[in-house]
Image: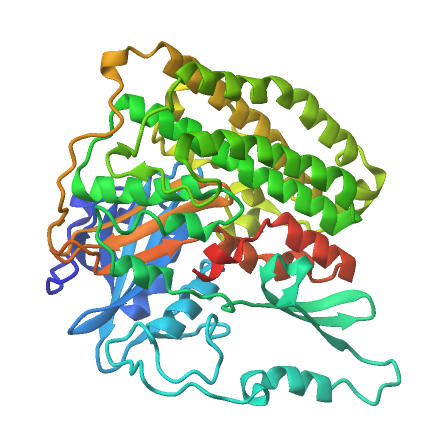
Length: 555
């Protein structure tokens, strides 16, 4: 376990295949519930990451978690395979308490850039050889690191705008004499409809061409991870995941916490409850995708009156179903550890009829949206061959969900690391090969059709389920206290992609560390690679194609 002193390196023939290529670099082993884990010295991290990426096929750096112990700091690199996410391993990099200095893994995985910046910003670990080590959620003038034990929560944090955004003023002053030569600096956001929330893009333009873009996040950071660390496993954490995705994907998020906590505490979920979870999560996915579709038409072609209203009308139909099931329209809080909070509402026949009425009319309504969007010459011109993200770059940045599948990456945790009832149902993973804005938009539209297929099969099963076997929740202890220093990382396929949660227990009824791997965080990091070299209007179309929700980016 992480609290133990480093042990001797395990012989290669005793190591799991996912760790074996880095055996000569390991200084010890750890027992994480989700995957084998090995310790490496900071200087050996790039070589160890490279060995696992190239030889073990762990080409997906899903998450980077930093934390502090009484005697040291450590960074955990959670590695998986895009081809098979059940093949995974973790590399743990300890550093001294007095001098938390590590080495960056960004030379091997580009996605480590933002994850390590967050670790530096909040925990205080510095990463040598990092390409751009600066704060990411807090302004550069912030004093201290909020998740370190030494942090003084009472210290003042006041700085003038010129000190907070000195790079902006430097860029403006370097523009030249105003004779039209050179580049121009442009702020987009943080308060702008095209940024879908409080996102600030620092854009450098060469005429109409995007010469550079720097996403500036952190404007809505709400300390969700820290609030979860103060809540009990059993009762107080579950309401928070809904708030990470206010587009409607909250039930998928609730499942991410449920899956991690249930595996951590060895809790089984009845089959009947798994079907209800699967049905409700797919309705939640459809709710999120319909907002993404309508908002994207608004971003790209200004289509407020038709496509936007069509998609919002579809959302209302889905919300009517979910309100009947959960009692809420958006912040559902419907999942519970071991199952769900209550059964299908009575009379059951009325609920099933409500769902079937929605599903029966959906194909024609989706065709109407297709006619307005995918067959629309303006949208095609604005989205085809713009914002291109090649599959190699998509993997390097750790993108998942429709963003990765729009680049032809056949990766979906529902199928590849099955949970719930997905592996017993008939449905397909949707991919598009071109990696452009059009592909990502088309993936979401087609995924709505697949979600409808899943919901219909769940309804068929629930209608015929024997009444005396309708168990909605297993017998869960009132107080859950996992063993001290037990660690786990679990993920689900949320509406935006892989939503993962790392938890470390300390023997109490609250987590010692709770880390959220929001899919939008890694997806958004790829924006500069997608937008640089394109035109300014293409930047807005590309940002919209990511379907970014800042609640899961900033957390």
